[in-house]
Image (tube, rainbow, N blue to C red; front, side, top):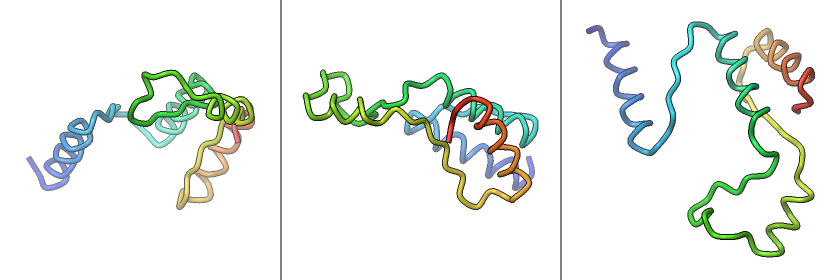
Length: 95
């Protein structure tokens, strides 16, 4: 196993140790498609913090009602990939 494979295995192991879901994709295009699909399938406002199994307080519920925009942030993405991501997002109403 080369150093790249060892590093990748370590990254995956560490990510899964904190309950991250790791999905391998074949290309950057597949990764962008996957990210947009996941965003599209999520509720616009989900408070994903400890204790989220408890009901929301009235102020939190009100805040969620005002936050219905879906956003994907991709700082540092190369311009050509950002243009592709922008097009995918625009087609699905994601900012």
